[in-house]
Image (cartoon, rainbow, N blue to C red; front, top):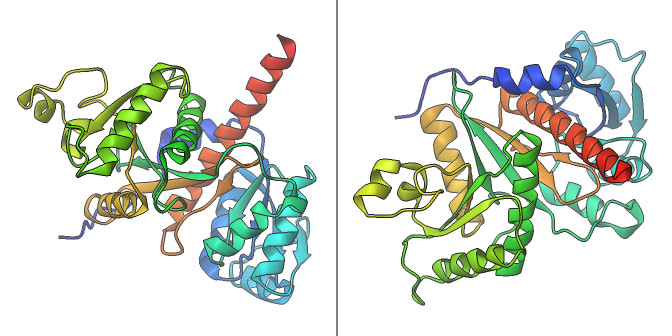
Length: 316
């Protein structure tokens, strides 16, 4: 049942990112072969200028295995994963790195460093994670949020989650992305709280609390992604069957969904945490090199979009 089709880093993402300047990226605790080889590959592809933060002896030993000459790279020593996160976050907060990249450490450890006030990375937005999902040989993408950070988000949390995902889609060139707020039903019912949340989010979007997207819900998964299923059930609107973003009810739903796509369809899950002053390249410890490279490309595109947006804002 598991897919044996090789995963791919989407060519359209990689080509677009390679045309942009390298992003100075603090790589947090890259003390295993997969995390360090991911940083090397992203550097070789011209996506990042890595700053390696972690146990210096371990990093140098692994670099030797990879035949990676670290002579021209910055390597900041740290005694453990917690200190690696603190140093990397301080570097980004000071403006000396434009992105963070998770290495071999727990997500909670990295995010604790991001959320410390002294790091200077917090904003008015709530942190949330977006998966940019692609299939081998396809340039069609589907974003899933939030499957990593917010376990049981409130309606207000979901407003932040929606805004972060919409901004990423704008960066990718979607002028008005279609967001489906998922539930197990299209009917609003008290017995399914996620349907009530979805209806509330649609109302909030209608009064301008969520801008820049077409937001509809509640929608069941089949009716969000299959036009045929939506038509059979008589569900209209702009989003049904054509969703670009799936806003899931909770972390478990999103986690199951993205992993099903990865393991049954060989999807590549490029992951970013948004809502801080810099994007955080964050993938699962089990994710392959292709997903990590795609995440670096996604980060580069997002950073360039934010720079262009700030420049236009200042010019205006």
